[in-house]
Length: 326
Ligand code: MLT
Image 1 (cartoon, rainbow, N blue to C red):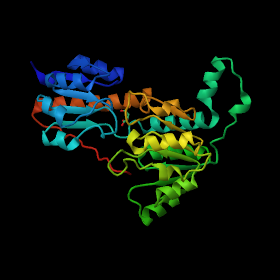
Image 2 (cartoon, rainbow, N blue to C red; image 1 turned 120 degrees about the vertical axis):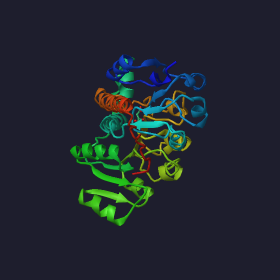
Image 3 (cartoon, rainbow, N blue to C red; image 1 turned 45 degrees about the vertical axis):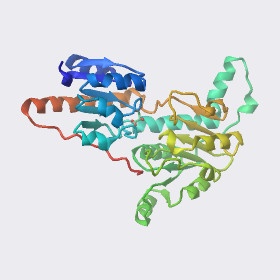
């Protein structure tokens, strides 16, 4: 069996990429895939293509003896043990920033839904409830927006926020006065302390990578700094927010509402789903035609280069992305 040509795909990818792969490789698509199924089948494949739907850890890599390449069709690498991948000499490729605009736009959709009760109103009207007076909300324009992290998603959010005449604030893991003054020149206030930013803002968007440093970063103490009309939007990873603390804050109506596209345990129910001041989506930040097409194009280019180089005996250096809190 030629394992080199056998690809396992465990997450949704663009049709263009799927067609390319089917033409050139022996492709198996399994999504969603259970952990057990993945562990039992990985030995048969040379290449694994995934997004956030599976975990690549030592246990999986130990079973995937024929794996030579892992492709993360997206940005985040928090579900992949990059050190273990590299120790085993497996090539790794991802497509950082390709979906930043899609994620940024989704975060604005969530802000509108929260402040204008759009999802609730839409559900009510289907039941012939026309309760206009309980649907009074807020505009986004001229609000103070705080971005947790200032990487490529945050930059896109800031770009859109300017159109709403928002006052833009952010926090980063490596605050320096020099960075603060650089951002100040772009009319962005960089806070040294996340709680100070929470106190100052009406809207907080969490858009930093999930790392040890950001695990549980948004907890009860941070949430207590928000005002009762504030909204919190998470487009990063579930683990950045302490979900139990968020649940309490929503239950006590400490804040106006929260929305999240990401959860600690995805594909499972969460107590948050019972709260009517909460909106959830199933990790669809990158699900725009545009970003999936960009990701497809980059992966096709990478594979073409790889197959060209293997025919000429050269090796493509796999790119390992860094996951700091920008
Ligand atoms: C990413 O990190 O690229 C996002 O989580 C999107 C995804 O893979 O679905």
